[in-house]
Image 1 (spheres, rainbow, N blue to C red):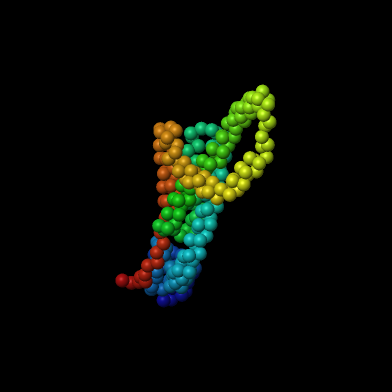
Image 2: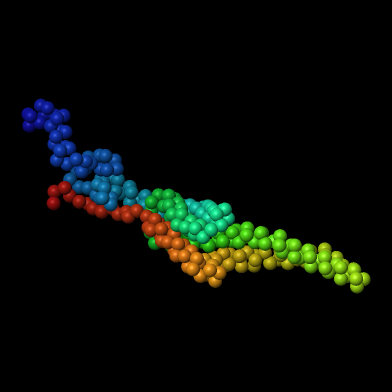
Length: 252
């Protein structure tokens, strides 16, 4: 007793840290633990911190999932735009590897939004968003490359119109006024805009399998890489394992 209190600082340091380094402190609030403690995963916790985290998890479940979806959708849009831009610039099959980057981006963004919470519904959402981002990127890619063929089509159409004018001049017929036809086409386009957007969405979502018809080998490679990216998103969205266990006693 006299030795302990006669030189309290050295004896306290020796007894506290040599025999039980940090194991008798809460790893969250750093307070000394008594004879009873809890475990949050592998970390020791006091009763107050364990109950606080248990309450916050129960309250934050729905909000965390909504934030994760919002972050995931944003990441999917960014991934789709980046995928399309790189595909347009490189114009090569190697851009299929961007599927891996999209999967990582979506999964990481969702875990950022949920503060690390994950689970099956997070994984399903991450997989669907990754697939949608990669497949829908085909639409702007097709539109871009289709514009290259537009000049050829216009040239051919101009030749046909010139030939038609020559025939009409020879036969003495007047060319019909193109304005009503143009107006009719515009009205039809406005009326069918919703149906057109729906067909475009379906076509985009089916694009990874449509590629199989054009080039079966590279189409299969693209699908394989896409599923690899989905798997990465799935694994990231599993989140960190989290569990609160206890109470435990220092003296069994």
